[in-house]
Image (tube, protein in one colour):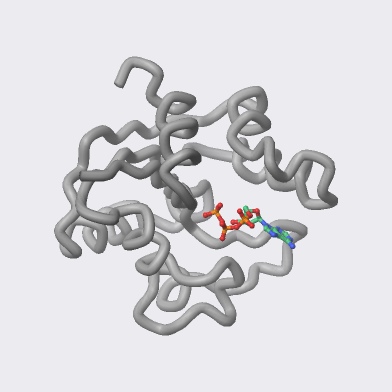
Length: 138
Ligand code: ATP
């Protein structure tokens, strides 16, 4: 089976949606391997989002992600990487399909960053890298 890194971003924790989001992950049948609520530092976040370094939204994204606690989660299951991204919906929450986390619970907050509630690894390579970054002892 496969593992993925999920983050409930600061907007999700602030709005009290962490439980609802975890509920959807578990209801789909994925197993929780690790969960940790913490406020991430900018070093970790810059590393996490290294592929976006240099883009206009990079600094605002790191600031937003450091603005409060995130719930970091490792989840496990058959094709969980693809499966969680399907649960999450598209990046822009306004256009995300109803039934998805972003489609049901997210909207455009008019900030420099898409405040879209969750992150999920996008490939096995990203998942391995991100899990090692957020949970070095796992
Ligand atoms: P994630 O990687 O967080 O699951 P994603 O794969 O849907 O999201 P990416 O393109 O990897 O989206 O972008 C990472 C994050 O950066 C997005 O989730 C969003 O918070 C922010 N972001 C992406 N594109 C933009 C943009 N054009 N303007 C503002 N913020 C953006």
